[in-house]
Length: 283
Image (cartoon, rainbow, N blue to C red; front, side, top):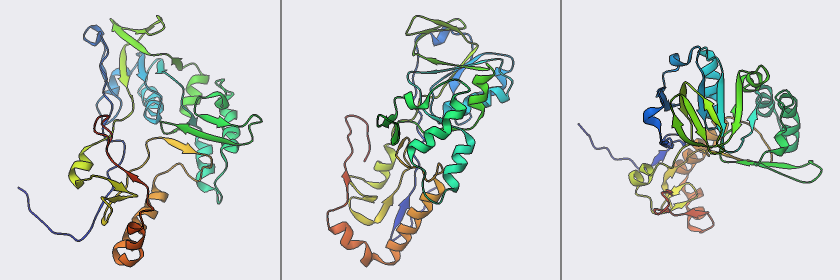
C-alpha cells in the first residue's frame, strides 16, 4: 500500500556504491568452485577455509575481501587486477583524519612507502600518481577508493596473498586462465569489479540536468552522491562523514534562508551536467 504526502523540499543522498558491475566469464559453468560477488553478503566466506580463493578487482572492496578471506581461514589468496590501485596503511589514514591542515599528496605517499617497502612495491610508480620529477608534489587520481588497513600489506609480507596484474580470459575446472596465458589454481572466485551508475535516482527525481547539487536548477531539490574514486593533491580525511555533515548543513540553511541560494542558482554560475543515456551515465 502506498500513501501520498506533500513536502516543500527534498534532499536525496543515494550513495555511489549501490549497483555492482556484474561480469560473466566464459567457463563459469565448468569452474567447479563457488563464484560470487564480494559485497552485500552475496558470497559465503565459510567456504574458503583451507582453500585458495581468487579475488578479481583491487579497489577498496577487493582489499577488504583479502582480509575477510584470511579471517575465514583461507590457505592463500590471489588478488587479481588489470592495474594496481593505491592502498593506504591504517596509521596513514589516521594521520590524515586527525590533521588540522590536509597533508599534501607527496607527504602521504612518502609516509605510506614504509609499508610498501615490506611487500616490496613503490607507490610512486602506480598509474594513479601524477607528480613532478623530484617527487615534491603529487596528485593521486584513481577510479577506486583507497583500501584502508594493514592486513593487505602483512598478508603479502607473509606470503598469504599474491598480487597478479593480469586479466581473466576464461575459467576451467579449478583454474583461472589469464590473458597472459598463465593458469592459476583457485577453489573459488570472488568478483569485486567496481560499480556502475544507478539511473534510478534520475528517474525518481525527474532529472533533466543537475546544476551543482540542484535538480533541474530547483533549489528545493538536492541530490548529493559521494565520489567512487580518488582525485586529490591534499588529504584532509578518508571518511565520507565529515564532508557529508557539511552538505546537510548547506541544504538545511538553503531551505531556511532561500534568499541566500536563489541568486546563486539564477546566476548560471553553477556547473551543470546532463545525463548521457547512450553511455548509461546519469546526471
